[in-house]
Length: 453
Image (cartoon, rainbow, N blue to C red; front, side, top):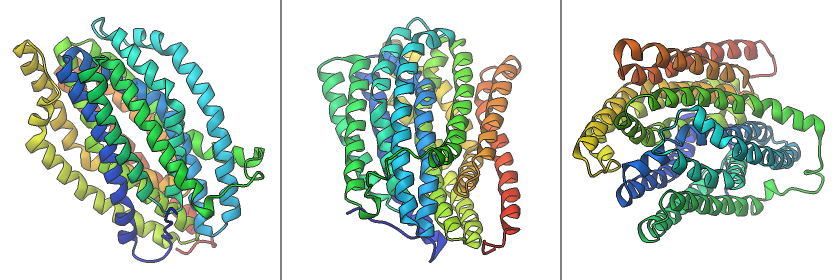
């Protein structure tokens, strides 16, 4: 039986850390198989295939983040109901989340397959890689139901305090993916198609593991009544999930514009930028994992009317986040160059040297901005945990405006460094807006007598 964790009593720091660490480990394994994808394709094939896979990142995230955002919003309601001890409402929310997820899968699958090629052309994807990138993404999008299933079921588990099962699921998926990458790419020579198929199969494994845990958790056992369509509850869930999905989409649009501008530089720069982009998830994972933990902590405590613990949880999370960011930045500064070298392979040594130079410059710039990014995760997740998904959505627009503004204007003044700076400026603008939104929301909640301030 999956474990549950009540975070409405006891040390907030202890709860957040104990809940966060398995998420970090799980996300690390998830990033591991992404890095293995890049390493194997870059060494078994060439820098062209590696760039084709890496360049798909923002478009991949644009589509999948809609599914992820919706399930994240659904989890807010489930966590709040669990914290309030209202298990009937919690199960009803889980059942309606399942129905909404099924409908979302159909829409996203059709739209992504129809629009993929035109969007790649619109992004000015280099001719050397466009067909490979398209093939890779068609297969990845074909497995969208598995991605949404994993995020939905792992969201159910985390909402009730179980972060261990998602860790097991992602660890298993990583191991499967590594084995299949070697088999499909290095042995069968399926190139980018092999990487994509391996990823989809491993995602299926993680989905099934989380589904099995949900079925074995009594508090999450659903009845027929729970999955009977409830328009009012569906509307409430979509009100929570849609802003997060929209926020992710807006951020992704900025990333797509960034990738389009990058595609206009030399092929060597595109290779270097793409190599670093594959490390983005790795350097962000501690912050995003912390955000998942504080979001669940906040949701449960708001459900229990413990606003005092919500505020204390945010303070502790901010402190933990800045500490984590400094450690990650130091590691990337010291070991980033040899790590990047694992992904860049070509017969022309000048291509390798040039791509590695650009990649390391970009990595250093992102590392410098990590404290602000980790604060962004903490404040955004806290706001979402108290049910405010509007300000986080606005922060997505802020990221979009800052990223596009910088990437369109600064390269003309400072060259490729304008691309590097755009990321930090986007994080900073969004974080400042989220901080303002958090303190505004807390003041409003304190005026409500039902919460313990």
